[in-house]
Length: 504
Image 1 (tube, rainbow, N blue to C red):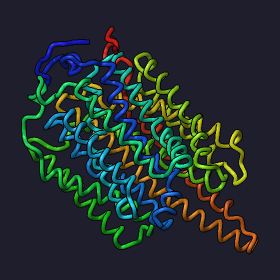
Image 2 (image 1 turned 60 degrees about the vertical axis):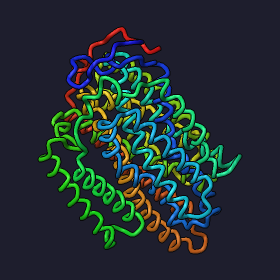
Image 3 (image 1 turned 180 degrees about the horizontal axis):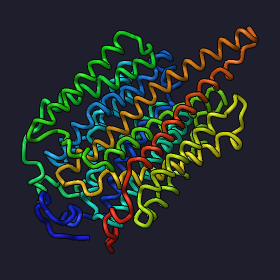
Image 4 (image 1 turned 120 degrees about the horizontal axis):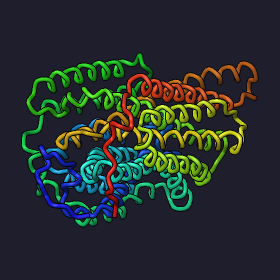
């Protein structure tokens, strides 16, 4: 599809319709590939954690930082990354983010000690904070509102939803048949290919009619307070999972976060060109979407962590068997994501954003009924399939409500906010659920020792911890369904009118 260039800022047409010489099919494949690499990397290391710890002599207490270092920088820098894309060009930001992510992956693969590995993971988070908002804003500005954009969102959502599960499968295969280092190295050829193909698929928006979008200056005070505030929040909840909520540094981090975020809001209400325009939150549907995304992401990331631990530690699955066990979840996400992209214009997002969290909550509740000796077919399989179906419904529908009708100049920051809520929701939930798991495990282990002495069953205590975490995660998804019912007021008539545009 070829269209003539025009000024996007202030244009009455959709940005996608005005984008020059965009190869829609290639652009969608490239953006999906970039998103897959970022999402996949959030979980691909999960199954490799035991091998990483053994190889680099990382303690069980510290090994969680392999995950946390990535989420810390990712979540802390997302807002800044989104605004950089609006100001200096989204394709340029995407290219730079892919380069940073690829280099960090290479360094992580060659890491010889804990410090180098954690530094590489943190640098991956920096790259991810550039790539994620650039990808979603480019999906929004490249494809026309209506069926074309719905199809693009369907692909994007399927990749986002299944990427985490695919990461677990890929992590198992790479760890068992090659080495844990390949969960890092695998990103290198992918990153190089994406950077090479980028100029062929997407025009440089900083040199086209979108120049008007990034006139202005970066909100430095807002950038500093938001980045430091979110980073302090993520660090505080991560530390709480390890040291407890009464720890001095935990309390100090959370207080600092509250002060910095309050300062950030005050700054954004006063400056002429804010980093995060508060007008984004005047739309009740967009605000509700952010809340539902945070709750859904929290339940999802917590589920992936504890399902993996249950399968490998309690059920004794090998890395590759644990990865393969996630295939039904991947299938559920893919099926429901494509179903949602078709049904969204017909029934609207509100029903989908109610049914999705309910299904996901039911799947997690079923997991909370697991026993130490539960079988795969009767225990894990149905739960993961239902959970996957629910998450696929959520991802597509929530993106339509979060970015539909957003002004072109806010596409980057609007996309970044969706990613911020996803990352922060995941980080906070993992910290809280880990604390809940730990308390339940300790209580049950003490009970086992008191009752059975040396014959105490550690697997029973572990399962008690995991299932308690699953139960709380199911409550998060149930709350998401309540938010959708109570606040969302989007019907199919509020969605963009259908057009005949098609991807090619």
